[in-house]
Amino acid sequence: MKDNKFEILSILFFVLFTASSLVYYHREDVYIRPMLYFYLLSVCVGIAALQIVLCNNFKKFYIMLIILEAFLLSASFSLTQQTLYKTVLGRDPWFHWIFVDEIVRAGKIPSYENIPIPYTKMPNFHLLITAGMILTGIPYKFSQYLFAGLPALLLVFLVLFALTRKVFDLRTALLAILLFSFADNVLDMTSKSIIPNSLGVSMAFLIYYSIISMNIIDRRIFSIAIILSFSLVLTHTVSYTFLLYQVIIILLVSLIYQKEVSKKILNLLLILFVFAFLEWAFYSGVYFTSLINILSQLFIYGFDVERYEARTPFSFFEVILARLGMVTFFLLAGLGVILVLKNRLRDRVSLIHSLVTGGMVFSIFAPFSPALASLGHRFWYYGEVLGSTFVSYLFNSKKILRIAAVPFLIVLSLLMFGASISNDDNPLTPYYSQRTGWFDSEVSAGKFLILHEVDIAFASDLDYIWNLDYLKTSILASGKKESIKKVFPKTFEEVEMCDCIFVFRKDQFENRLFYLGGRWTQTPHLPMKDDKLLEKYKREKNVLYANGEITMIWVKA
Image (cartoon, rainbow, N blue to C red):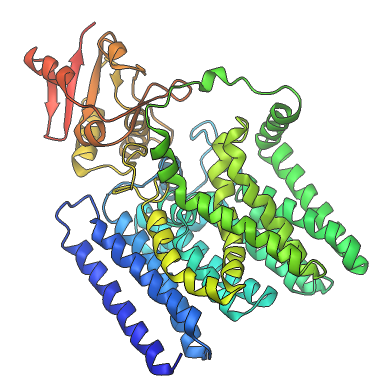
C-alpha cells in the first residue's frame, strides 16, 4: 500500500473517531450511548485493521500511529462509559472505593475488623490509587481509572506488542494490540470493574515477558523479576497464581530445551512459592485457607451446588449473544495455538507461549466448575490478553485470512463493545445484564434513605440494597463499614409479606435484568412487564418517597 493511501485511511479513522465523540456528546438519553457510537467505533476498528493488513512498509511513524489508534478505541469506550454515572461501575469496585477513601481520610490502612476485606493485608492496588488521590485531589471514581486501569491498559499494550513482535513479526504484533483494544473482558477489567486483578494481570504479564524474552540468568533481570513478584503477591492472589502457572510451564519446557536455564527458573519458582506461602498463610491469614477449600472442592469433596440453584429466566439465545464475541475470540485463539504448535514446536519461546495461552483459553469452561465459577472472568481477562497474539497469528497465516480479518473484526468488535460484561448502559442483551452504575436520582434516593433511616428494614434489588452499605459508609465516614437494616425477599410474593420499605428502581425493574434475594439466595428476574404491584401500593397511599425514578413504599405484611 502506498503512503498516501495509508494517510487517507488515517484521516478517515480520525474523522469517524471524532464523529463518534460528537454522537456521544449529543446523545438523547444522558445515561445511554447511542448504537451509532458503537457502529462508528467498529468501523474505526476495520480501518485500523485495513492499514495493518495492506501496509507493506511499516515506517516508525505508521507503527506509532496504529498503536495510538488502538489505544484511542479503548480510551474512548472507557471514558464515555465512566462519565455516564457519578458512581463506580461493576460490583467489586464499591468496596474498593470505601477502602481507599478510608485510607485517604485516616492516613493509614484500616484494620480488618473495621473494613472487613482481605486487602487490608494486600494493599498495593489501593495504595497506588490513594497516592494518586492525595497528589491530585481527584475523587476515587476517576483516580481508579487514571492510576490503575489506564496504567494497566498501557502496560499490557506495550508488553503485548513487544512479546508478539519477538515471537512472530511486526504485522502480527500490531493486529494483536488492535484485538486487545476491544476485547470485552479487557474493557471490563481496565475501564469498568477496575479491581486489583486489573493491575495484577498486567504485572504478571510483564514478569512473564521478562522471564521468557530476556536473559533470566542475568542477575539484574532475575532481581527485577523477584521485586515485581513480591509486589504482585501483595496486590492480588489470582494474578499471582497466574504467574506461578506461567513459571511452572517455563520450567517444564526449559528442562527440555535449555537445561542450563532451568536451574535459574527453578530457583525463581521456589522463591515465588515462599512468597505465596508467607503472604497467604501467615501475613494475610485468609487466602491459604480459601485455596485449600477450592482445591478440596475441585478434587476431593465436590461442591454443594444447592445453595447456588436458581432458575434462569432468559433464553439460551440471549446467553449466547451476550457472550458470542468472547466465545468466538477464544475459539480462534485455540485454533491459533494449535497452528503455532504445528508450525513452531521446536521453538522454545513459541512453545512456552502456546502452552501458557492454551491453558488460559480453556478457562472459558471455568464457570462449569462451581468452585471456580466466581473467578471465571478473571481467567477470561488474562485469556484475552494472551489469546490476542494467537488470533492475530491465525489471521496472518494466509493472505486470504488477512483480507477476511477486516470485515470479521468489524463484526467481532461490535459484539465485544455490546457484550454484557463490558457495556453497562446499552448492551446487545439488556435482559441478560444488569446496570451497575447509578442514576443521579438513585444516588439522591439512597442518601435520603440513609439520612432518614428508621427502625424498619429496607429491601430492593440485590445490587442497590447491598451497595447502600458502602454509600452509608462513605457518608458517615466513621472509620468502619456501616450497614443499613435490610431484608432479602427473593420474589415479589415475598416482597408483599416482608413488612419492610421496598425501593423500586423504575429503569432497572422495567428495562434490565435484576436480582432479588441475598448473596446466596439471589434470584434473577426479567424486566417487569407491568407495574401492578407498584400501582397497588400507590393506591393504598404507602408511598414514603418518590422522585420519578425511585419510589419507596412501606409494605405492611
